[in-house]
Amino acid sequence: MKIGVIPINIDVAGIEDIVGIARHAEAAGCESVWTAEHVIIPTRLETDYPYSQSGEMPLGGDMNFFDPLVTLSAVAAATSTLKLGTGINILPQTNPLLFAKQAASLDVISGGRLMLGLGLGWMREEFRAMGTPFEKRGARFDDYLQALRKAWSGEEVNHQSEFLDWRNFRSFPIPVAKSDLPVFIGGHAGKAFLRAARYGQGWYPAIYSAAELAPNIDRLRAACAEVGRDFNELEITSVWANTGGLDELRRLRDLGVSRVTVPLQSLPGSAIDGISWLADEVIGRL
Image 1 (cartoon, rainbow, N blue to C red):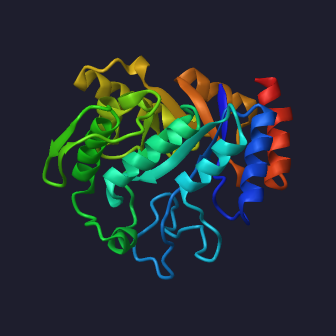
Image 2: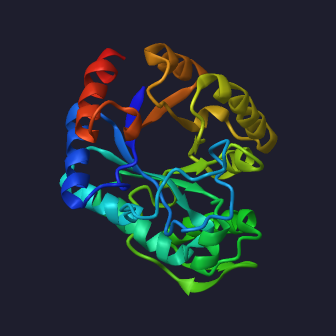
């Protein structure tokens, strides 16, 4: 099983910390490092945070929250084999043409190490601040992702839709794998399963246990059958928050999970200490 750590772009002082964590993760045998994304953290949040029972967001607005692609560019320059994941970037609120250029540039600079986790987003205040309608973000996501693949093809791009009017251009550089740059569809509600089946090379839900993951994998399998996609083509990434020990990791592996991301805050001590523990107690024993 492949092991990644997340997030390397939150509550860090600067490049020394980011690069230090990444280099230590690479030396420790981690396969990947991952970022999270929010452009803003509102001082008064009206939208319920969907990943806690209280609806309250655990992050404070006064901590550093570095841009994912900028962060991973620094990591790319400081490492050689470590894969670089966004877990996740909020696609519908961004400018997709600029994002296509930035992602392709990072992938080429890193030698094809980028893995794009992409999701719909949940924070209405963030969409408002970004100047993008919160409504129809699912349709916008689907349209943007198809447009991104055209921009990454190296061919002439024409894409007219409800949201975009792209005509008669090409965009370079193109990702190392061209339009097959790995995209992991985030989420485990609504149409996330169909999106993963239709558009993803992988699926990355914010699920923290094998028991909760199992029925959702069944839903993903059913979505693949519905659209005629081979379920085994999808790479499943889950979260292991240092609970249940190696037995939990084995349960995840038996469900078909090929990678787990480990929250740094769930590990003992500092980020560096936690990664050392991960190397000794988990990676070295799998």
